Amino acid sequence: MPPAALTGRDFAAALTVVVLWGVNFVVMKYALRDFTPFQLGAARYVFAVLPLVLIIRPPKVPVKWLLLYGLLQGVGQFGILFIALQVGMTAALASVLLQTQVFFTALFGFVLLRERASRPLQAGLVLAALGLACFAANYLGAGHAGGTTALGFVLTLGAAAMWAMSNIVARRAQQEAVTYSPISFVVWSSSVAVLPFVALSYAFDPEATRWQWLEARTSSWLAVAYLGWVATIIGYSLWTGLLKRHPANRVAPFSLGVPVVGLATGMLVLGEVITPWQWAGIALVVAALVCVMLGGRLGRT
Image 1: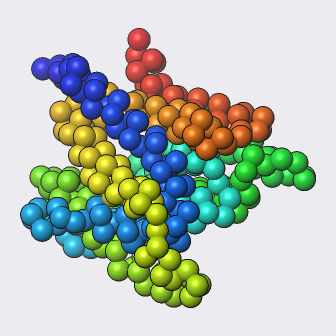
Image 2: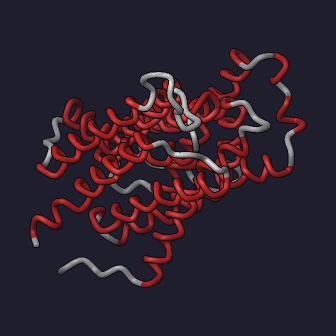
């Protein structure tokens, strides 16, 4: 039987996720006004874990995959991303650069899982590499860098690579435990990230900032609640629900809307500026994503 068409409810869920995840980056910027990156990581995952960890049973997967996913996706991806946003990365560009996880996932899949790269994926990798070259060219010379730094750029790519590694871990977990609950996996893996973030904060945050979260503004706490409950729990619940009901190639193209929303909110809400080199890089990365997600479908028409 052919797969069922997306219903109006499915479209609404997909568009909701796009908006929730696109706005996510501006919310991170607001939260970082009163939290250090490590404090924000700990707070985000405390909100993501409570109270669901008290009512949802642990997923039926080997503990090693749960720990690895929590460390890579939680501490790795978001810890590095929060640092990047603090030292020199705009919310708008972060929403685009983080999507390079698609290409890092393909590279890691080839090296670690011996997965072959399709023609659209190969073309997408070339376009993505050209796009990253444009972003890098933005830091040559002493010109305007659009509110970003080379360090922020490299760290954001590092966050995307960590996201890709967590994707590989999720695939391996699914191979060993096909019937596990994705929501249970997200909640319990989130609990893994809390203590490492607390330890990193204690070890590396300056003593003057160690307790600044106690004086955080209400708006910053609301931002943390958004990151933990809305973007993480609601966003991933809706997304995994779509993936359960429909093939991934029908659901994945909706993620192309995330950088569009991220760019728009970063520019409109925070007044962020995009340089010509960055616009060129954005165009090439988005073209690469379109090539990967829609190339196979277009080739069959």
